[in-house]
Amino acid sequence: MISKTDKFNRLTVSVIAIAATTAPLFATSAKAAGLQLMPGSSNFGTAGAGHAAIGLGAGSAWANPATMTLIEGQQIALGVIAAKTDIQFKADDPDVESGGDSGGEIYIPSFAYLASINDKMRFGFSVVVPYGNSLDYDNDWEGNNVATEVSLETIQAMPSFAYRINNQFSLGFGITANHTSVEQELQMTILRNTMDVALEADSIDYGWTLGGLYELNASHRIGFVYRSQVDSDLTGTGSVGSSDYDANLNWENPASIVISGYHQVSDDITLLWDLGRTFYSAFEETHVELEGFPTELALERNWKDANRYAIGTHYQLNENVILQAGYSYEESTVETVDRSVDLPLDSIQRFTVGAIYKVSQNTDISLGLEYADLGSPEIEDNGDPLFASPEGEYDNSAMAGSLSINYKL
Image 1 (cartoon, helix red, strand yellow):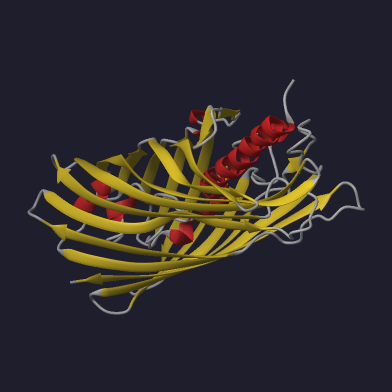
Image 2 (cartoon, one colour; image 1 turned 180 degrees about the vertical axis):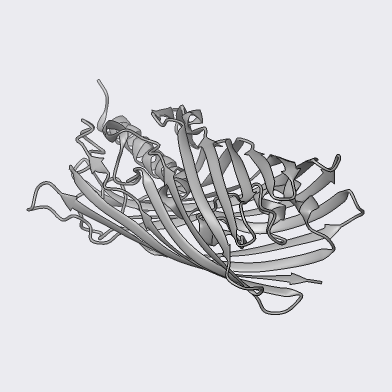
């Protein structure tokens, strides 16, 4: 017979495991929910379309290192994105609390530097925040057993190099170092006792980026960028009530590939496009270990690979101003049956406008605005008696603005 103490310990393991795994899950949901917003890019106004081929300023060091060969001299770029998410859940049962607006405000800074080593070689360095988001439900809402607060921040630094093979082909390569920190809070009732549950964890992990550029001629080029999968080992502290435990969990940040096109069809108009795929199916399962407990918990994930499609345009209004517009569509990473309230993900549509203004011979300022329709994901009964989510539907959206400055040294 299992004693009450053993049962409590097993439930405690499960509780912290949920906290530990939902927080890094949201790290990826930040990207999937449309909040990986081309940090440091002057091409924000085209929904990121063409970013692996266009080669705009020092931000090329992150967007696609190979496109650095399109740029001469030394350049530096500073940028910030401000985003506001509106995450509204409506439970099917009108008598339960739906949690209010769980969205939040996010500020995403970026820095990039690019330098010509010689006619064929370039060096770049970028510091960006590619992922960042938060959820903040009301504490007494119906799903507080899964999540009340979730937050994530990833800071990424990448030195990169580019080499021009000939007049048509260029290659680029970068090494990425990511510092990821996550926090999660929830409330659980265990053996009739209601307890606050929390997790704080972080890690530093490394990956790589490979880029290529093919220039058909001065008006048409195609680029690609591949970002490697990064296997993370997050460590931190989990707490249940007044008890603290060392926590350790694995996480796989998925690989992705993007192919982009740049086509100057007239003196004034340039067309841009993206085809991308992120390999979310790497999320097979998450293992959680708690020091002091013999049990290791493995949680199954049923995520699937997802494609992204984007199209955009630049219009040369005059010698100092370029107008931008873009649209992108991203497929959902999860089916309704596998969706939960800590990850209200669905397909995403982005609508963007922007402008690049040449202030002087050496300085460009870029402004962009984006509206993102994050879909209306449904939540179904998952059959879990301990971590059941309330059934209902979301109405999710986001607004974002971007400001970046590129300066030629």
